[in-house]
View 1 (tube, one colour):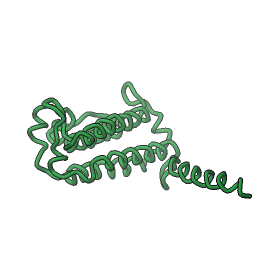
View 2 (view 1 turned 135 degrees about the horizontal axis):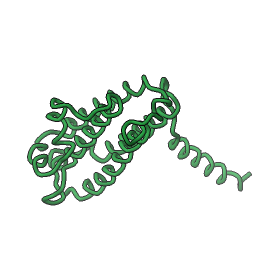
View 3 (view 1 turned 120 degrees about the vertical axis):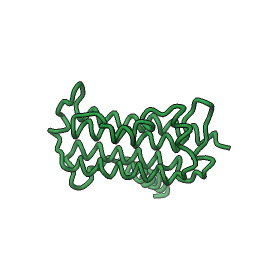
View 4 (view 1 turned 180 degrees about the horizontal axis):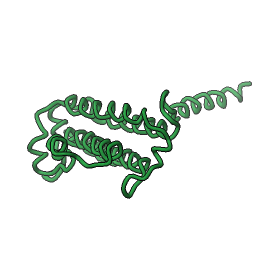
Length: 182
């Protein structure tokens, strides 16, 4: 029995770790869409962990003269997701009103560095939260057949996979930036 105790403890520890890494379909979603939502939400929570405790200096921090601040990157993630909402659900790009709201965050650069500052990280996170809330509401009304449909040169599934990979790329960028904040 003494020899089994370390094995049992290791097995319990491994089970707890494994249970945290399960993609679960949220209630009310089709299988494939629900898996995507689970992954999108997991990535969003990991992005948030990098920035949630940033003060104003950290929110506006620029790694160099061509960099984007953590706040601007969060806004950029929201803008990208908002773009794919209109692209996949309405089959179009941004209209003039949406361009005015999102284009600076979508494209970033010098103008964004000048505009996206002096706001707390919660400002950017609230925008990101609202966009995700809308994404989930829109996806809840769709099924896996819709996910497979082509939309221009890509399927709806691929479009939302791209949103997910985009988040993952910027999560790495935020990890690097937040480690450099003094």
